[in-house]
Image (tube, rainbow, N blue to C red; front, top):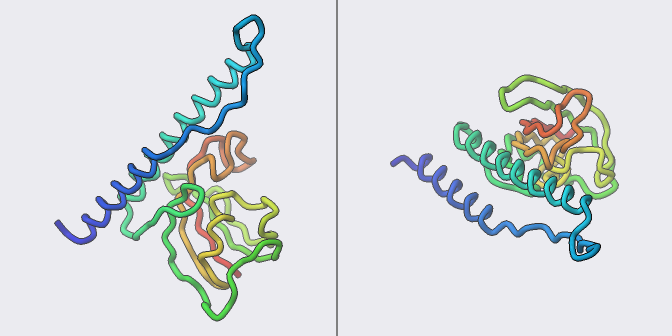
Length: 177
């Protein structure tokens, strides 16, 4: 067994263990009428259950994609797999809350179809970026580059955008300017 294969197996085992430790989100108390939950609560529970299954499926899909890559990925914040291509100029600071940074961002489908190629200013902490991107900027310095495998629930969620479909798992390449 090569070192690279062993690394992939270890990462896969760690990911499975992390998913096994996943706790179910607390649920709001039902407001029972005559001993039964209102229909809205049943519908909410069904949607929550469906979204949890979709999230687990996304995690599995990204784990499989990560294992097929040549680059070494690690699991970071917001269940996002990331490979740091270049940490950047380590004499420069990392992004901090409420600071404005120019970020070059390329967003791809998992099939590598380019959806978005943009360079613009974002204020950190203002939810202008996908959660999976914003929560991991602190690992890079100015001119740093990274490739992220972001699950839909840490990207553009159930609504999507004009360019990104709802429930779309993404490959996002970022560069801090």
